[in-house]
Amino acid sequence: MAPMQPRSFWSVAYAVTTETIVIRERAKSALHSVDPQNMALKSPVTVVCISLLVPLALHLTAAKAEESPFVWSASGSPEDLGIRTGLALDLPGRPRFGSESNLRLSTGSQPGTVQPPLRLWGEVDVRKSDVAPASVGVRLDLVSGAARAALRQSRTIAAEGPAVLSLNRTFEAGRRSDGESAFLAKQDLRLAFTDIDTIVTGGILMDNKAPFRAEIGLEKNLRPGIRLNATLSDLAHKPNARVNARFERQW
Image 1 (cartoon, rainbow, N blue to C red):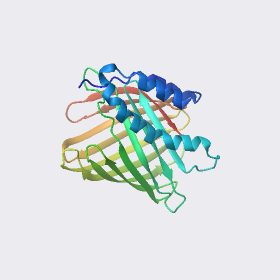
Image 2: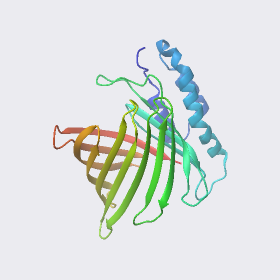
Image 3: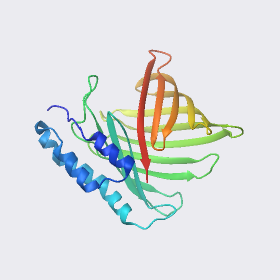
């Protein structure tokens, strides 16, 4: 089967950034834009869209509150689109859970999405602090069976002057889609310049199925909801540079 060509990425991105497009009409036009040779994919795409958009519809009809019980976020670029929805409970640690999926456009170097994934996720804060917050989370891919549990920690080292220096750590363990065990450790040092809305990062990544990697990066907010990322990775082996722009929105 040929990879799906989701030509409606820009229409979805436009709907997210402008907040003036009727979701029901956009979802209908997105389904009609699928290539005829991929008509069989309409069914899984419809299931994913419904599971992800129902919480948004509930959110739009709910009364405004300081901290909404509904989770809705979207991010994307000219090559991919990701959506996460869910609920947040008013309990200690503010437990959050829901579903997420993503679509990728076919390019010369990688195939596009044939069967949209549907993952379940959950998160809870184990330490809520402005200086050193920490949280744990889980993710389960219903299609491949892959699963991950993660511990995330962040600590502010220096917050004086025009920049904030912080250290972020992530530890993950679980099962890969091929059934093999997965262990990952990542540490990032972040220097955020609040006046110019720019972040410089430097980090290392250790994975039990890949060689040790180091990378440096630059993040710049071009405008609210639009972020430019530049990354130079795998510095110790074969340096690889990436530059892309993504939109990111949360409600």
